[in-house]
Image: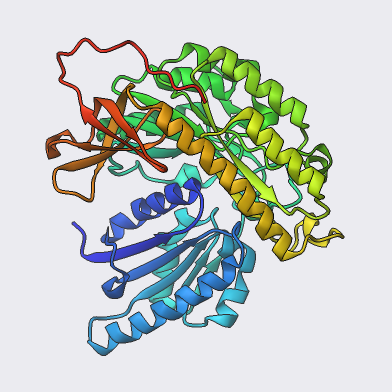
Length: 458
């Protein structure tokens, strides 16, 4: 039973969301139960991301607020608040965090959170700040307990690290080289999640489709083969995976999209730029034509497949013509969601030293134009969903009384008036309205003879 409270504030990618959940798992035996309120927590951990602009400054700003909360808590006689910084900023900044914020108690990189209980014990004994940013010889996954309850949708890390070394990215330096978990460990964790009520699992990795884990048969399994094995788990209704690299979409994975109904018709596939010279400067390892061929094969395999993507505008040296190439590619390929950002230099990455850095006003203007196009595509797709019947996983309570919110097969939020007991179930919903960022629909009676499959061409 929980005797102390733990608040984890998570920034950045889905892998960080997974890591935060696993940190809660390893601290649970020490008596820590989760709370959303940091003001009166016994321990607060910032699980940080180093991808976004000014990431470290945002961490120090948040630490300043937490320091005041801790002082208020101690003044009330409520005991000490342990402050920790985890994740990629911790890995990249290391001792610098303790230099700037000496009141921090724990600093740990993403490869070290399984050692949190040991760090807390050392902190209790010695009183000195603890730092662990080492890359362990043994994978952290080997030392984690079984996952706790995650709800109807859950993340499951199958791969970590990246060997691609895109010139703008810090991931190879903060997460390390690619590592794929053994198949048996993944299947065991998936079964444990399903036994606790999970219906949908999203497989995670910095380069998830580079997965090459050791199978129980002694062979090296691809992501496609792993997906087929996961799909055989009784009670698992949906599978997704993210984030993918276009170079690692192989024949087996494409076939899985055609042959595995459990695999949802939605894929996040980062393009980053529509200009081949920029892609080469980014060290992406593919051309626009390569990307188009992959997309064409995926859509041939699964005609209703919808895509999301990532884009960086204003990469060093990007010309007006090259930016227009990106707009043209987006217009032609079509994406129903996207993450788009202005390029910002990351210290230590090759792109930070490139000449011809694009002026900030130019980057801002390009980003606005790209986002206008991407938003228009998202709205158009949502509106094409009107009148369709979709299976929706109702995973949370909505803002209005009697409302539940779920996810469509294409990852859109869907708002439905539904009784509370249906939370955590998959229900057939008729989409009445496609809104800019979500869908609104109504439950269909269970006895209705529904159309077999929904289609909304991206």
